[in-house]
Length: 442
Ligand code: DLL
Image (cartoon, rainbow, N blue to C red; front, side):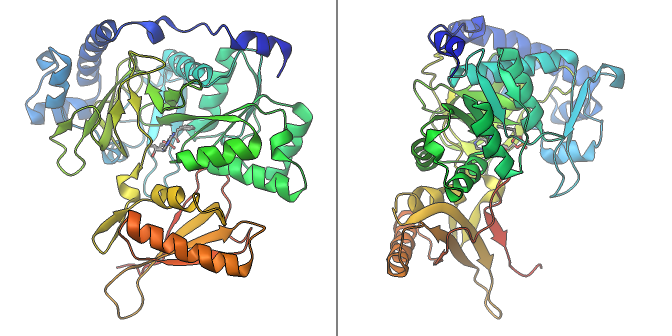
């Protein structure tokens, strides 16, 4: 770390909104929410139609709990309005466009005005600062650049904070660690599985990943567990914090984690109003602490106001700690569309990660294969997981048995476990696909 960076770590200057009281924050939310629903209704045909169909009008929003009267917005809505139907401003006022990859259907397109971009950069900067990043630090940004919001979103945030950004993007793993050695960054930004790929590649080249200049990592864009945090922190001798976000709501920086508490990301509630709903009965809004699907309403966005967006991310809301007025989100246990239902039992990849990383012989590299053997009506799950380098064949067999038993005990699912050789499974370059569905297509 540079000398200036060391000096700066003790005197972070917070945004005023990070330190206001909950009452003040809720008053701000209410006035911003009232503005947003009226703005969306007046400017986006889809919202007008949906509100009218639901029999609600922006003037019905008198207190925060009235938000529950308003209809949800889904990814499908954005797809149907492809490409620009959700935009609330004329195209000349749209300063940038991002889009999802569209691998599972039509891409969803999102847009930003200049003010939206400034707010986004401010919130990413706020998230990074909470995670220990300070002006003057060198930041190695390995999130993918392009239509994905990760690369450019993180880039603008790090610049806004006053960092020196190294915009390497994802991929070219050897180049990643060469530049880490040569440029000596203080911070790395990546998905957790890609950071693991980089660290692993270093070990393979005989480089000690714990001996680099890196001190902090800010990781997100995919679910990860406390066990993975521990793995990466020890392996790389860093402090790793979470950053959460999604394109439809903004991009990275909807929520960020404080390094002093490492207890989940604080949702920046001066810009987003979160709710948790029952994923199976969305009319039910759940209380703080209860698990369900996360829903967001934007409070300040101009180009793409978003009302009650169903994220499909499963988590719960917890009271604020390091930023007391802003509630935290628990770890995302998974997405409702990533849930494997195996003989009536629900299972998420993060549960496997949690269990596997407590078994010393097993590495964090695993994938889940779903098959349906010919002539059978039941699906089968195989966990393919790499053993650690030093583990013998006998050790692997024993570890496979422990993993299988623990999955049975802790999740209730029966599955096969194949412990495979180090380096034999697909590595991540960004968001890792853990589930491989090999069942015959209906
Ligand atoms: O992944 C934005 C992002 C970029 C966040 C970089 C953090 C860092 P999308 O591609 O639209 O946007 O994907 C959003 O990714 O609904 C979650 O399912 C998942 N996700 C994002 N951050 C986290 C996280 C970006 N910290 C989807 N933990 C979301 C768990 C996350 N899941």
